[in-house]
Image 1: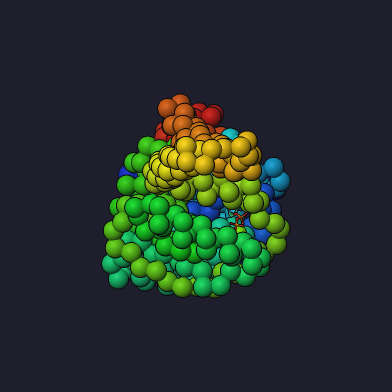
Image 2 (image 1 turned 30 degrees about the vertical axis):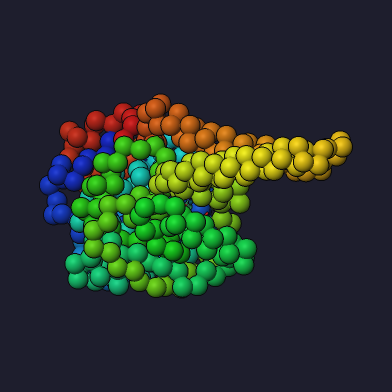
Length: 346
Ligand code: UDP
Ligand code: MG
């Protein structure tokens, strides 16, 4: 497969293009998806070709080790409206999405998974909602096919906890598949934080929102890149990036425990004065000590979670590094195309 006529260039921001403004950008982060990409691209282009709007597809290669990037380079040869931003390694889906958001030019933008769990056929419906005047079209899963009951249950618990802790409303069962207007994207891109829990970040700007129900399909093929440990990490990111209530909860629990310890202490002293005290009470002493130790360790761990995130924020490292941007040369103005620098950050 020859990719010689594909340019490898620094991405040019929208205003630098002489072409008419793109209406819709579809951002597709992918990581090792060679088995599904041809079918995904076929279905996506079939949908976009049938739409009157000018659309672009922005693939983001999140450091794939298989032939995914080669396949996408092949797609790029067939259309000047397809581009691919190849990151220098696997930075994770949240960073890959940020890269896509920062490099799309449309007046509206849709993030979609490459594994066909989010049906591309729903895109026209999302665009029509945007045309009605909504800035954010949330796609809510009415059914989560191909997922275990435990994943569905833990997801439901997580959204309950997040929404009760965070001051913003993160819609339940809305994944990353959604439409955002250019205004919302501009505000999201301006957020300086490194801990990017995108489902929260997408909800943070607010604006006019609408939620549309859809049935989420099972993965077309291959396996999810998320295991339970990674999901727990993501859940912790979500809660700690949007709320300090766990810290307050630790203070409240600490206060309650200290208060009960004081009351219990007074009771023991009084009891000893009145009745005397033979050496007993080992079980109650152990219970109190273990309970106190548990609460203390939990609170220290919680503090650590926040301090760890402060540590990451203070380092100010970029969210991702771009190795190359692939697109047909026709899309670039020749002098600007030469600005490419390997490893340049976004
Ligand atoms: N993905 C990515 N980087 C990663 C992991 C996943 O870009 O480190 C992409 C993946 O290729 C897919 C999307 O994110 O297009 C959703 O991933 P996955 O299907 O594994 O997640 P799930 O649907 O199980 O939440
Ligand atoms: Mg998936």
